[in-house]
Each structure stands twice: as structure tokens, then as C-alpha cells.
Image (tube, rainbow, N blue to C red; front, top):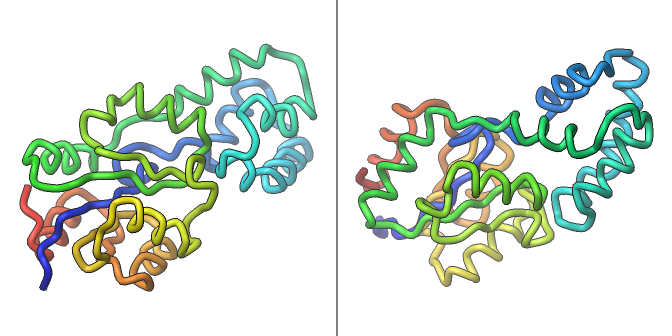
Length: 206
């Protein structure tokens, strides 16, 4: 088996909480007094219509909010709402594995994640992710999203990596399967112990 040189990481659900999935969306809306189910459903419909544009960098956070939340209500300041969105992000246990691998200095580490630009850049800064990652292959920069095979191929092309020398880590099965289909070793994250063991089986040493 070829030696592993490169590890691609999802962020939400692996090293951080999700940035703006349904759980975070409902929690923040509720905190601003938006609890009526009909309004929540309308927001959900609006979100689905623009989510791909938002996460592929084709609309800004400001534009996204105008088309979703502030198309339904304007009873609070947009800046306050954005701050509450940012506050949903927290580090989770998988961060410890990332930190150990980064400290070894043996591998090229990069994100490969679906995320909107403003949330992505907040999380990079807030959690000092540039201390661990050499590159950020985020959907908002590459204008495509997992599980589109092209996002994996683009990351391979930019890094000039052979897929058999790469590992991709994600908590969602469809994204793991897509990486496998382009020849990348892929691990579906469950917990730090499971991840460490799976990496060790591929010869990745912490």
C-alpha cells in the first residue's frame, strides 16, 4: 500500500460542531422568538432554495439572510443575528486527533468541507485552524459541494496528490462514498478512538 502523504478533513461533525445545519438554524431562530411552525417551515423552504448558492460562495451571508430570515421578519438587528450564528460553533473531540497529527509534521493537511464563506472564515479564525491546516478546500472557494466528485478531483489536482496517497475524513456516509469512488481512502468519523485506529490501519501515525 502506498504511503499516506495527505489528509483531507471535513470540519463540521469531525473537529467542530456543524456551522449552520438544521439544529443550529432552529436554535437560533427560536432564540429570536421565531417559534411558530408555519414561519419555521417558510424559513426552511427559503433556506433550501438558496443553500447551494450560499455554500458555494455565490451569495454572501448578508444576501442569504435577506432572502431567508429578513424576508420574514425585521424585528431585530442583522449583526446580532449573525453573531448568534457564529456562536453556535464549538470544538469537538475530533480536534484532538487533528492537533496530534498536525504536531507530527509528517503530513499535508487540508480541509475539504461544505461551508459558506463568512462562517468558514469565522471558524478558521476563531479556532486558529491555520495552525493545523496547510490549505482550505471549502465549497465557498471551489464553487462546488461534496458529494460532487469534482470537488475531490479539484483538491487532488491542486495538491498534485495521487488519490491512493490520500485519506479523507467525514462524518457523512455519502461524502465518504464519493471520496472512495475517486480512489481516495475514506474514513467515516465516529469518535476519536475509532478515527485513530482507522488511520493507524492506513499507516498514519500520530
